[in-house]
Amino acid sequence: MESGLPTVPPYVTGPLRLTAFRAMSLAPRRVGDPASARAFARPYRAVRQRLETWVRRGLASWDRDPGIYLHEYSDSGLTVRGLVGCLDLSQTATSPDQRQVFPHEGVHPRQVTELAERMGTMRLNPAPILLVHRGPATIRDVSRKVRTGTPDREYVDHSGQQHRIWAITDRDQRRIIDEGLSGSQLLVADGHHRYAAYVALQARDPSPGHRTGLAMVIDQDETPMFLGAIHRLLHGTRVPDLVQAAASVGAVVSTIDEAEAMAALAQDTLVLTDGARWATVRMAVPEGSAMVQLADGVLLGRLRKRPGKVTFAHSVGSALEQVRPGKVTAALLPAVDLDLVVDIVRTGRLLPEKATSFQPKPSLGSFIRSLDE
View: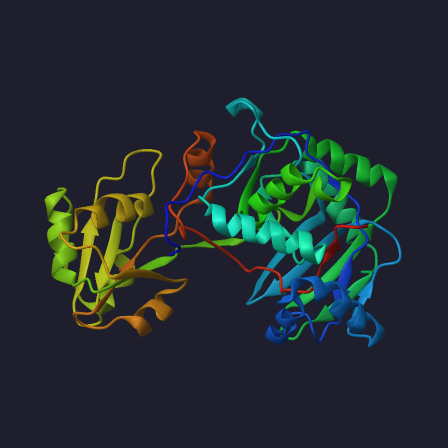
């Protein structure tokens, strides 16, 4: 976890609108290839030249005309579909009732500044941030009609993700999308620091290219992303230390077997293990709150000695690979329900860092946007 306390990201107001852009995409065999990330590495001023070299070599291409896109990708049996375009982030909300883009985690100012400077130097948005909402039926109707046509691009990328992409050019369809999004409330699912960097870049230099940021808007009612927990790995903290801390706040602690552990996870119950010992901690979770808030704010706060460091695991399997008896203890958490996340952020609160894992995310390289187009 980065040193220093996170700050509240900016809130943006509308009317929200996706505008067209001329997309760059990597060649299918380069999309999702970890080696492709090197194209965006230092020196950042050389990134555009690298990508143009890739274009000449047939490893990337620019679309001829600007557009907004319907992007469908499938990974591990899940299919996600969303609209990709440039979202106007130039209007900052001045009161709670104006907020239309809702982050749910804090950001570190230094990281935001670095990302804004990096994008300003590269003159690129390397990938869209992900925003989710429960969209109107009118946009879902447009999505169905667009998908009756042949995709403009269809491929399987290096990582095995399957992609289908349609450019939306029909004026009536674009108008319906504009009307449907104008009053929407969008939750930032992935890319909090990039979202804040978009706003910071626009505040620093309000030129036309900085008014918007590349975004993918996903209708959680049409193709829901999987919302999983992010588990805590507490280094230098023993299971008895956590049991004692839990008991001090009135939690109900029970010793269990490994075979029973996953079945015990619930909205009011987390599981502690170092690989040798297993225990459940049941706490009274206030209405409108999530267990991860209590775990980070209450349970860890009552430890006599803070962990040497806290790391994270996006799956139980990954967490269990890293536990060590007496040395590294995992706090396995229940997933936070999407509607609860929305309820929390609408009241002006945030979840702790690394509280949610929205999956699957699209592979890097499927959409890149120039700030100079």
